[in-house]
Amino acid sequence: MLNNIQKEKLKASWGVMATSMACLAEIRVYDPLSSWQCYIYAMNPEDEDQISCLIKGFTLEACEWRLSELQSRFNAEGEPLQLDTEYRPRRVAELFKKLSE
Image (cartoon, rainbow, N blue to C red; front, side, top):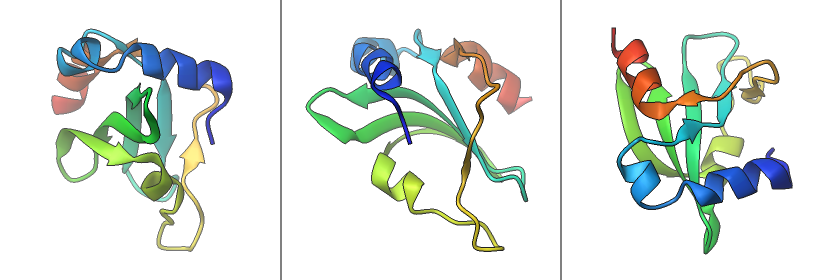
């Protein structure tokens, strides 16, 4: 799902940058059949399966999740989630504020 450049950017944000939401949300994954979306902003350098992300569904939450779980999700039609190739990185704190409105 993620290329090496994206992984390296996400790993650099792990820790204090991710905790303070001072980093960029580098990746957007979404379900084209619903309003569900996930913005990935950090990856554990010691465990590439562990990510930090914002998830916007019925509510908005910042959480740690597993990349493998994200990749195994399907929508109501049985289609996998989509990687938004047109998404441009945004500051997590600003994105959180915008999505909270």
